[in-house]
Structures are given as structure tokens and as C-alpha cells.
Image (cartoon, one colour):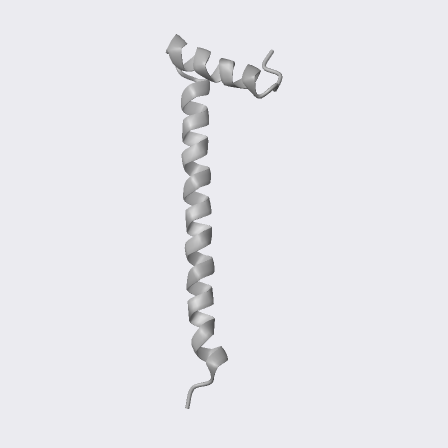
Length: 61
């Protein structure tokens, strides 16, 4: 005989695990893009990031 809490627990754990995995993947991708643009030799990438900082009213200098 199975209780409803026993069958819901693995599903909730799996959902939390999946969510944490997605958040970690998103954070890793964000860091790769951030460092890729920050250390890019391309003036196009630098200027695009610089313009975004001005548009969002964040200091850049």
C-alpha cells in the first residue's frame, strides 16, 4: 500500500533537481557570455556591451 506523500516526494525532488540544473546552466551560460564579451578583442562586441550599459543606466567607466 502506497501513501500519496511517498509517491509525490520523488516527483518533487526531481522537479527541484531539474530546476536547479536549469538555473546552473543559465548562470554558466551567462558567465561565458559576460567573460566572452568582456575580454573580447572585437570592437563590435565591446561597443555593443558598452551601449547596453548606457541604455540600462549603469555606470561603465
